[in-house]
Length: 340
Length: 213
Image (tube, rainbow over all chains, first blue to last red; front, side):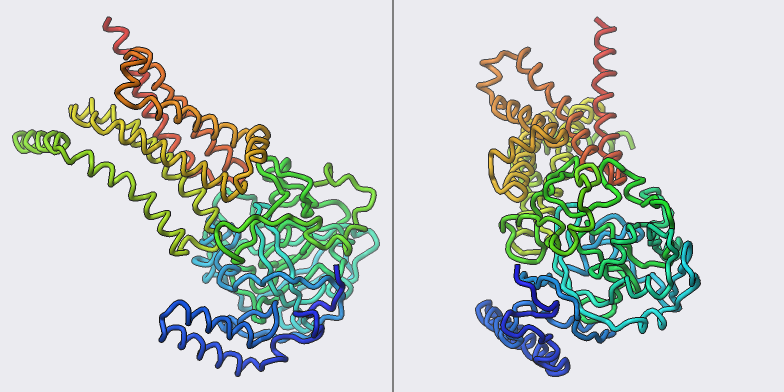
C-alpha cells in the first residue's frame, strides 16, 4: 500500500485538504446553488449532473461536503504517515444517524433521536490512578492541549458493517504524556458518561453502566489512537460521542468509548463492558480480524454503508482493519485466536 | 344488547363467507411485503437497507406465524367457523415471508453463494434453526393444496401440518439466539409469549378431548 501523508485526498496532491482548494464559504455557496438547481429542475438526469459538478468542484476523491450543522473545528495537516484511504467517505447523514450508543436506545436510529438531551456544557475529564498528575481537565484545556489533526479512518463495527469517517482530534499519546503515567501503569480505562437524567437507557439492564472500555498502555500510546473531538470538520454530534471520544481504528468500534468522563491508569487489565456482558463474543483486544469469527457470524467480510446500491457485494475485511503495517508489531508472538 | 352482539357476530360470519373475503385477506397479507419492497426501491430503509430488509422480513414472518396460529383459537372461542377459510392463505403467507427472509439473507448477506450458505448453516446454530424451519414450511406449502390432502389422506396430512408447531418453537429459538448476547430480548419475549400461549391452547384442548373420549 502506498504510504502518503494522512490528508492526501488524491495521489497527485498529497498535502491538500478540501478547505485549501475551495474556501469554506464559497464551498457552502456552491453547495446551496447546486442544491437549489437540483430542487428546481427535478429531472433525475439533471440532479445527477449537478451532483457530479459538486464532485468535480472539489477535484478529489475523498472530499466530503461540509455538513454545516455544528460549530466547525479547525485542524492542520497531520505529520503522521499512514496509508491514505482511497475509499469513498461515508455520507455525514449515515455516519450521524446509524449509531450504537446504547445509553440512548438500542436501535441504530435511537441515538440520533434521543441524544439531544446530552449536556456537553461544562464537560470535564477526570484523570485518575497511576499517574503523577491526576486531576480534572476541562474541555478548554483538552481542546488546546495539542494541535488538532484530521484523520480519515475506516470504522469497522463488530456487527459486520463499516464506514469511512474523517475524524478531528490528536493522538491520545499527547494527553498521556502530559499526565505522566507511573512505571507500573500498564492499562488505560475509558469511562463514559452515565447520567440517568440525560441518558434515558442508562437505567435499563442492557449493560453494566457506566460504559467502560480499556486498552493496553502500548495500544493507548500508539499514534493512531485518536482522542477525538470532531468529525467532518465540525465538533462531534452528540450521538457520535460528544464532546470527547476515542477512536482506535484497528479495533472493532465498541472499543472506542464515547462521551468520556474519566480516564484511569492501572496495573491490572480492567473489566470492560461488552467483555463482562458476553466474554465468549467480545474479547478485551477485539482487534479487527477477518480470520477470527464472531460465534454467530463471520468477520471475513463487511458491508460498507453509504457506498453503492443494495446489491453491492460485501467487501473483504482487512487484517487490523487495514492498519496491519502500523500495529501488527504490538501483538507479535500473541495468539490472536485466543486473545480475540 | 345481546341481540346487538349476535347481529354483529352473524354479520362477521357472513362477511367471512362473502366470495370476495379471501381476496381481501390476500391483499391484507401482502401489504407489509409490498411496503418493505417499496422502501427498498425508494431508498427509505435507512443507512443499512440490507440489514433492514433481512430483519423486517423476519419480523413479518414471525408476526404472520402468530396470526395463523391464532386462527383456530379465535375460530373456536368466538364461534366463527368461517374463519377457517382463511387458514391456508395465512399459512402460505408465513411461507412466502419466510422465503423472502431467506432470500434476503442468501442474497444480501451471502451473495447467493451456495457453498458459503451451506457452510454458514452448518456452522451457526441460529442459521441452522432458521433453515430447518424454512424446510418444514416448504413441506407444508407444497402439500397445502386439496389434491395433496386427498393423496396423503386426512390423518397423515394433519400430522404433517402439525409441523407448524415445531416451526413456532424453532422460530422463537432462532430469534432468541440472534438477540441473546445483545441483551435486547423485549420483542423476543413478546412474540415468544404469544406463541407459547397459542401452543398452550392446543395442549389444553388436546387434554380436554382425550379426557372426554
